[in-house]
Amino acid sequence: MNLKSIKKVGKNRYEFTIEINSKSFEKFIDLAYKKKNKNIVVRGFRKGKAPRNFVEKAFGEDIFFEEAINIAWPIALQDAIKESKLKLVKDKIDFDVISVKKSEGLIFKATVTVEPEITVDGYKNLSFEQPEVNVSGKELKNELKKIAKKNARITIVENDPAKIGNIVLLDYKGYVNGKPFKGSEAKKINLELGSKQFIEGFEEKIVGHNTGEKFRIKVKFPKNYSIEELKSKNAEFEIKIRKIQSQEIPKIDDNFAKDVSEFSSLREYEDSIKSEFLAKKKEKVKNKTKEKIANQLEKLAVVEIPSAMIENKKQEIIKNLKNVFASKNLDLNKDLSDPKKFDDTYKQMAIKQIKVDLSLKKIAELNNIRATEEDIENECKKISKHLNLNPEKLKTHYKSKIEYEVLREKTFDFLIKISNENFQKNQKNTKKK
Image (cartoon, rainbow, N blue to C red; front, side, top):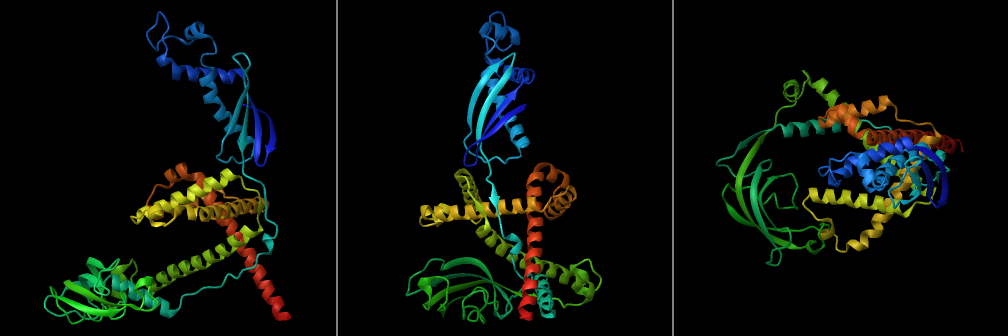
C-alpha cells in the first residue's frame, strides 16, 4: 500500500488517494478467484474446478477485479489511516476507483470522516479540593455489625409471636379508600422487623402476631413519600405471616474474625476492613472530583464534532441504557412516556461524553501521558482477579479498550493532582490576604 496523498475536503472530512501495486493486487485477485470460482462454469471443467487462467481466458482478465477491489480497499484504507495518525469516525465512506490494471495495480480515492481537532485551553487552571479521607471508629464498628448480621444464625420460630429483630416472611395487599393501588400487593416478602424498610407503623404493627395468622393493619403514608398520589394518604393492609425467623448474631471477637476471614485476630481483621473501607471512600471522593473535572472540560473544550460522531455516541448510550433496563426487566421505550422527548437529552449526553473523551486524549498527548505495557498488564490482572478470567485472554481480546481506560484514568489522576495543587495555592493566598 502506498499512501499517495491526503487532502482535507470539508469539516473533519479527508480524501485519501491510495495505491496498491500490481504484485499486491495480484494477491487480492487470487483471493477473489478462490471466493467466486465455486459458482463459475467453464467448458471442459466441473463447476468450480477451472484454474484461474482458464476462467480469465474465458471471461476476461478483469472478471475478478470487482471482488478483488472490494477485498483490497478496506484493508489498504485502514493501513493508510493508521499511517496518517488520524482517527476514523464510523460514517459514510465515499469510494472511487481512479485506475485498475493487472499490470499496474489499483489506485483509488476514499473520503472519510475523522475525529476533530480540539483545544482545551485553561485545563491547567482547574482548582478542586481533593480532601483527605479516613475511617472513624464508629464507621468501623458499624461495618463489623453489618458483617456480623450477615453471618447471623437463622432459626425458625415455631410458637412465639413476631418481635423486633425477627425476619418475617409475609404476603400483603394494600388499599387506599378501599381500592388497591399500584404496587400494593406482594407475596413471600422477607421483612426484618425494626429495619424501617417500610413506612412508619407497618413493621411495628406486625409485632405480636403469629405464623399462619391473617390480619389487617392501618397506616398512613408520609408527606414526603416517593409516589405523589399516596402522600399523606391513610391505607389499610391485609397481612398473612408465612414464617417467622430469629437471628442469632455472633459476638464480635477473635473467634468471629477466625470464622469469617483468613485472620486469626479481631485486630488484624479490623485493619483489613479499615484498609478496604478507606480505599472505597478514596474512590468515592476521587469519582466526585472526576465528575467536577469532566464538567469543566466540557466547558473548556473548543471543538466541531461531526454529526456522525454524535449519532454514534448517542446510539451507544441508548444501547447501554436498554441493557440496564433489560437487566431489571424493564423496556426503555415503554417506561419513558415520550421517547422522542428524550432524544435531545441523549444527544446532549453524547456531546458531553465526546468533549470529555477528546479533551482527555488531547491533554494526555500534550503532557506525554501514556498507558505503558506494565500499566495494561496490571489492569488486566486486576480485572481478571475481580471477574475470575484469564489475564492473557483478557489482554488478547480487550487490549485496546483496557489501554483506553488506563490512559483515561492516568489523565484524570494528572488533572486531579493539578487541580488539588491549585486549590491549596489559592487557599494559602486567601489566608495571606
